[in-house]
Length: 154
Image (cartoon, rainbow, N blue to C red; front, side, top):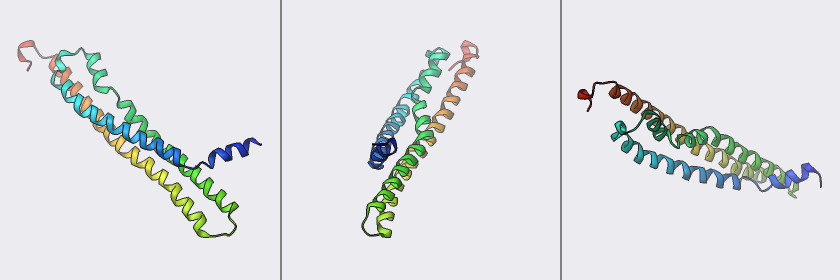
């Protein structure tokens, strides 16, 4: 068996494994957002108890996950689409009768992976940008308060 045939056999699995990966990414992304929405206000409330490095690390914790998902989910979705299109053309090649339905069904199923990739990426990027802005605001407030004389701090 040639290398091309081996890779083709793997590709003919289609885009379903990619969809499962994207669903998992979506669940993890939502979990990170919920965790940050709960944790950041607690950190902000007690920010003066932190040293600058610990505060910054605590606020930015897990934001890299959202950035990674936002950047890579569209590519993972595109990979699923490519696998689905390979499968659609293969199904067309082995079909006894040529028909638009054979190709269109496969391609429409393949495009679901692209949509799912965007479905994961867009909220991840929005959440990441929101949290980065919030972290910058908290750190700026912290620096301002640290530089005030002790009797003027809240």
